Length: 337
Image (cartoon, rainbow, N blue to C red; front, side, top):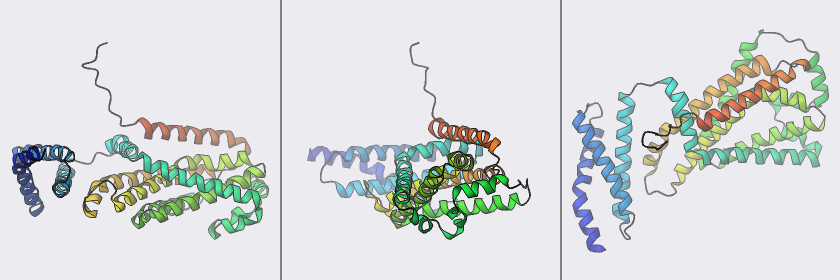
């Protein structure tokens, strides 16, 4: 086995050294445009070195060589995709319909942890309020002081109020977008603290929803609550969950589980995914802000079914989009029909 390992390293080392020289040349001269032959050679060496790294993992006692190859492959990956980013134009529709949902699914576990933490907080908030209703004011932050009002009284007041059409709605919409975007970005960047505060923020926001939800349901205002929250919440809450997803992706890179790559190299691998996730969440929040301002705040009892139907259709469309959009079609060329 040792003889086979020695032969393997002696045979493959020239390819590793050649790839290392090409990577160093590109890092020192990032503006230099390589020829087609150079690009093809670089790609071949990258694939071969990646394959060698996988093979080397089967040998015991070669941790140092494995670490060298891991770093080399990471550097080559970074240069390969940096070159692609400079040469390929940005296509918004392709990014929206393919890149974003594909990236979302690639980090599905992080999203599951994000949404799970939120609903765990919701269950905690609802349970706490059930056993001690006096805690309600302690859970409601000052900026949402109107939620301390008894739900039935608020519903009665809102349903009697005249809808002001488009008056000042654009300002309200902009303020909603700004606030929700701050929450989502904060949920993401706290991932740099090893994800601890990402979990805390998701749990806390879940508590608020759980408290409000239980309060309105216990007071018999479930229809109002659904018609109020579902139209914009069907996009707003998933966007916050995606912010938490991005934060947990950062936290995973901070810990570096399953790899010997340096921190900078680990972040080089997830940089594009993070930008994609937060960009997609930002678009969702823009739409949620518009809907919340111009539709969710319209509290006419006869309009509740339409609002609920609109929100349900939105939520279903979002689930289908994130689950299936951008999937590669099966190749039927070689299948027997």
